[in-house]
Image (cartoon, rainbow, N blue to C red; front, top):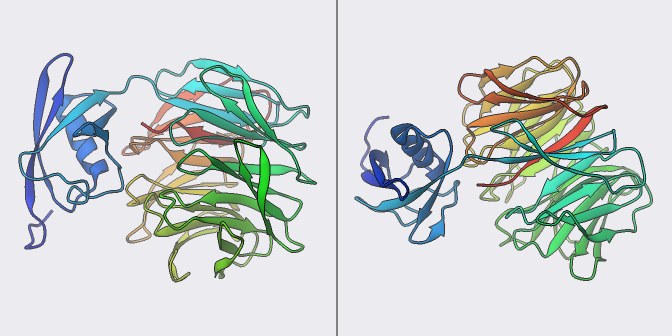
Length: 376
């Protein structure tokens, strides 16, 4: 990386408390905190870690400057030995795995139907949402007990997500609507209508400042809404159903996945398409950013997942090995690995840098529809 007048080179010290070991790294002030995390992990020879600065967890999408780090700043390093990964399957089960060790830690079953379409952890991992043909459910992860049931949709509930404060949930349904829910009362507080088009996915903006949600629709568009129900932007350009829409961690950009075999990146404020990702030979089922937004990963019915550079649109790696369509692919919090779910009933994890298979997680008896990582 070339030095530049607006990029100050910083000396940062990462300290482990047990045992007392430190590592010194040099990074630029405009590098992301995720880049710092990777550098410290490499220097300390630990595979995964989280960082604390002045007693607070750091946000991976922030630059060092935005996070308040200066030359000679010290950060506390917390090694991560277990990463929770939830998988939802058509066999009616939700498994919670240790994605690093490969063991199944817990199983959940609570929907009356035989299939669970979606699972999603809240920001802290305190809650887990699941959806099925009849309703959505919210679970307390510490006890495995159902926190509340969200009822009101008239058809399959196909996605669920939580706001940053874990006070609200958003669901999408084939009944052509998305709904905003208050988690204290379990009541619907807003309906986002999709007209005659099913809504396949709904997401909150992660920072919550804009009080927005985005929905993906069978009419070939994605829509950004205010919580009040006001339409902010309509993202147009895909030539077929939009199956997913997700935000970057800073809420400034969005990704869409489409049945037209492409994914697209958009500017949230203007609704402008910034990049198109082409290379898959079949429907793109999912699209997610890495924590710092520099990469994205897509899953496709062509049985592969692909890692892309968002700045250039270049495909960096193709992840293969599944015997069926890849229905879901996403990064771990540190972007150290990618997890994929497929129609073959398996979950796989891959090293993001090399593309090598790390773990094969088997146990489901039907297709695996969605995955969700706990942030760390």
